[in-house]
Amino acid sequence: MDKKRYIAVACAAIVVSMPLSAAATNTPARRAVEADIARLAKDAGGEVGVFARHTESGSTLSLASDVRFPMASTFKVAVAGAILAKVDAGSLTLAQLVPINPERVLMSEGIAEIFPFEGISVSVHNLIETMLTRSDNTATNVLTALAGGPAAVTDWVRTQGVQDMRVDGDTNDIVRRFFDIPPGPVPLNEQLKSLVATHPEIDENTTRPNPHYDDDPRDTTTPEAMVALLSRIAAGHVLSPRSTDVLLGAMQRNITGLKRLRALLPPGTVVKDKTGTIGGTLNDVGIIDLPDGRGHIIVAVYIKKSPKPFGAREQVIAQIGRSIYDYMLIESAASQETKHEGH
Image (tube, rainbow, N blue to C red; front, side, top):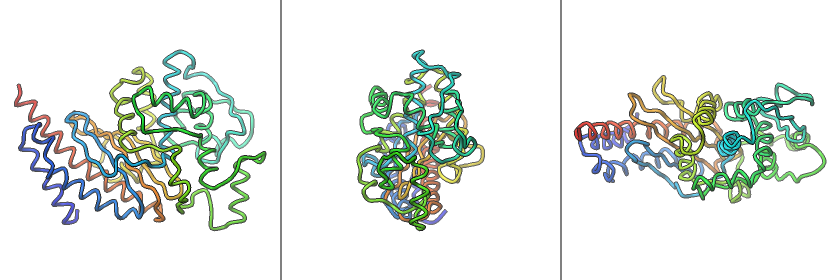
């Protein structure tokens, strides 16, 4: 830990000796940690938005938390929620088999990688699992259509009281928009291969920002809005207990975010997260469990307009995640101490 970060965490430690009401308004301590987050964010090379809330104390940390950022694959949390709401309503079942339309296939880990030929059907439950654990684009396209389309997903988000989030397309639409590929009779996978063949400096994993994509209001959220949605899901206010377990269980098994929020947390820390990555955008959102029943941290970290390598940006998210964790751990201790004194 460098000197500046040490000072920030040390300042936050002052909160431990204060009543919860004072801790919640201790602006010097919170500002010290938020300054540390802002300092770390500079290494991302673009714009960074952060919002985190401790479920027990209500303490928050933020940086540009009301600014809109491209969601990239973090929108898949909303898709999963909309689908599971249909399961709870009885219009879908987890075991229901869904045919995979070849037009919805988009290269990524999961279905497109394992099943290259036409003629498969996958259950709703397995589609959710591969969408959230591997960020499977094909599964996402199928589920977005099954939910009723992007507008239906946005409507579901609105019913949760979340206004500053919008879903305007599936992953095919997002990729087309980013690479400026117009719709046409040629499958998107073939168009991407042609693009790479004619422009060797470009591939589907390019780290180059696209200003038009970054400034497009479509498929965006604020960090605060994402935390609001995740908070309602985690509290069990949105879905049935079983559907909540399906969604959060898959996020806990996620393998795409090992170098982001999870990377610098203490061994054994339970994290349920969903990543998003395209061009200058690199995100991670999720729920971090604190030890000894001290509650949870709901957090969203978004980066846009960054030309830096993915690894450098992932390190920024990891460092911000640890800074948030350390501060909220202290806040949770203050909360428990206050409750104990109240008894």
